[in-house]
Every structure is written in structure tokens, then in C-alpha cells.
Amino acid sequence: MPDPSVPNGDRSSHKETDTYRLRRILAHDPLSVDLVSAFAGDRPLTEAEESLLSNLKKSRGELFCSDLLYAVTHQYFPPAAADKLWEEILRHKLDVSKKLKRNVQIIVATLDYLTNFKSDIHLPTLVNEGHIAEIVKMSMRDGLTGLFNHTSCYEIINLELKVYARHGTVVSLILTDIDDFKAINDQCGHQEGDRILKDMAVTIENATRDSDICCRYGGEEFAVILPLTNAHGAAEIAEKIRMEVKHIRVDSYTLTISSGVASCDEKTTTARALVNKADHALYQAKKNGKDRVVII
Image 1 (cartoon, rainbow, N blue to C red):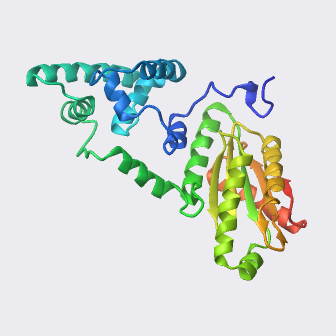
Image 2: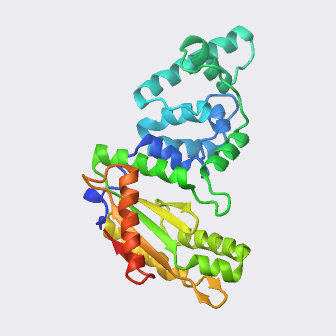
């Protein structure tokens, strides 16, 4: 049965490239530089790698060559341009390897071609892949909870709203605030407060779907971005989070949260507008007695 929260029941026909990459950049991305290098002929592919690449070709379709180039350069090339460019780079790799009488690996051939022949990259710097991942993690993640941070939250909302503007695919936002957190902090201490925030992060991640993006918005406030989900679908998840949070151990307190839920529409087309809308719903939840979910 189609998901009622998804327009036309379709969850896969529209993929915003920047959104896709931003979501996966800290996750396990199977298309590593080493695998691209093997795919380009720098070493033999194992059977498992051949199977993985075959599946990636099918699942990514016209974006496959864009992904190959992105893995090497961390720069996006549109599908049509990427197909042609990948073939040109392979020919360049072969030509240079013949001239030097040794194999020139794909990362060197790519950077050489894009820098010296196409001028698509200026002043390239080679950085260890693990180092890049660590830099990205530090810049995009909250240090205490490991969730996406305030800045990343806005970046991701804006990317999802671009998809909405292009394809009409709705995105919703949950803003959640721990009730009476200051009193808990004052009575239990800041170390216990930090432990509660970390437990909150785990609880929220466990209560949401793989497609949802969980963020620490600031202080004791959390945000969940729900692509391809209407307000009622988001409210169901917010209610699930509300119930699960009650299981977090906090001395004599029963931990409760208040949540505001909002979706984009013709009048809500910016990250700031969507956050303000959800924040107004959160305010109503607090005003009406806390420990509840309010939709606007």
C-alpha cells in the first residue's frame, strides 16, 4: 500500500543530489576512493566489489558517474557532463600511463585532467580520506550527542525545501524541547544533564526512520527533519518519541517533552519559515500544559 504521507506514494523518483550526499557523507558510503580506483583498473576487483558496483550502477542510474567523480574530487558534476568527463579521464589515465610506462592511478589522472586540461579544479590539495571524514564530522555534528548540529539542521532543511520547490514533495519538521530541564539540571547537576541529553539523542534516533534526520537544535531542544512526510505522519513519529522518552531514567523525575510539528507549504518555503512555524506549535504545546504534541 502506498505511504499516505508521500505524494503519489512515491519515495524514490526524485533525488536531490546535494541532499543525498549531505545525508550519506557521515554514513558508511560504499563508493570509496579505493573502490573507484579498482573500478578504473588500478587493481583487480574482488567478486564482492563487482557485485557491489553492479548494484550501485542499477540503484544510482544516471548519477553513477557523478558519484564516481564525487568520491575522487568531492565536487559535484551533473550526470550528462559526468558521463562524458569520466570517459575523458579514463582515456587521459591510459595516455599518461603509456607515456610514463607505469600505471597512473585514477585520483592522480583525475586531478591532473581537471586541473591542467579542463581548469575545473584550482589549487587541488590531496587530503587523507579519513582526515576528510573527521573534519566533516566535527563541522556538522554536535559534540555531545553526535546528532547533526544547529547549522547542519538549517542546511538540510534548505536542501529539502529545494526538492519541494522543484517536485512538490512535502517535508515536515518536529521541534522537541525537554520539559523543566533547568530544574532537572539544578537538582541533578550538569553531568547528569549531559547524560540525559545523550540519552535523548539515542531515544530520538531509535524512534525515527532511516530517512529522517535528527539534530540537536540547541540546549535541550532537538529537531527531526522528515522528508516526504506530511504533518500527520510527522505527528505520529513525534508522539512515538514522546512516549519513548518517558523511559529515560532521571532520579525522581519522569522525563517529559513537548513537541511542535509543521510542514512546508506555499507560504512556508524557507528554513527559517518552517522552523518558526514548528516553534510556534512547540510554544502552544508548552502553553497548553507540556508533555504533548501540537501540529500547525
